[in-house]
Every structure is written in structure tokens, then in C-alpha cells.
Length: 67
Image (cartoon, rainbow, N blue to C red; front, side):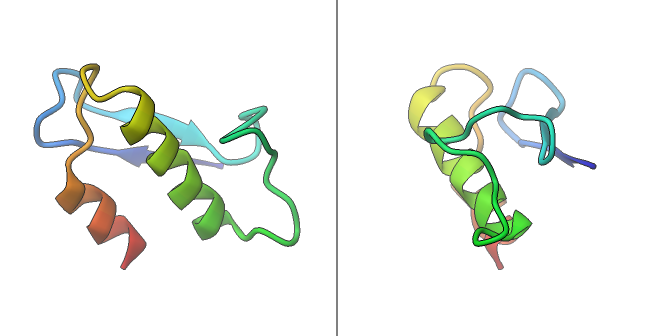
């Protein structure tokens, strides 16, 4: 399963985060203790923190996904 995210300020139109196949996010794999929405939030936080200048993910987009 993969989830596509669009960013209003991104030069790339979308990024795909594959919940099952991505090996690590913030140093850990998704587990039964961490549901997919919590894992996605961790993935987004990691991407925002490490790729501020490459395909900016807007705060509004992140907040909309968390809600």
C-alpha cells in the first residue's frame, strides 16, 4: 500500500511513501504497536526535518494529513 502526498510548494508534483516497503523511518520499521497513521506522521516529520530545501512539504499539508 502506498500513499501519495501533494505539496503546494513542491517542484515535484508528489512523493510516495510506501508504508510496508520503506525499510526505516526515523530509525525504525512500522510495527503492530505503531499504526500506519502514526508511522506516516513520523515519516512526514522526518522528511520535513531533513529535506527543507528539496520539495518543501507545507505545514498545512502535514496538519491536514494528521487531522
